[in-house]
Image 1 (cartoon, rainbow, N blue to C red):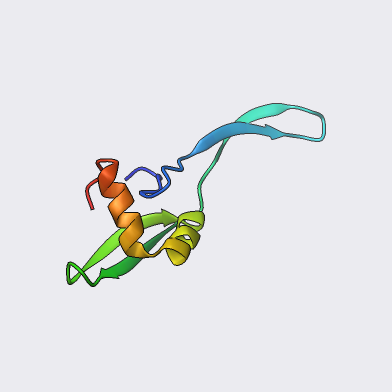
Image 2 (cartoon, rainbow, N blue to C red):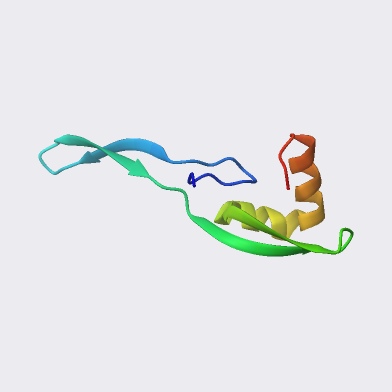
Length: 78
């Protein structure tokens, strides 16, 4: 499965390894993703999401219900 945050859409970025001699070789920067289960009380069910840690902070701030509502408004399946 792709390394993409389901909430923020963060994905793998590319860049360069730069050595002391200033040699450049392509590399990847992976997002800090975790798999987390959340309980939705209004639907009486558990939802598992693959999140970046910044998205986890957003959920802690806004609440899971508000975040799921925004995701559904964007057309994402939850």
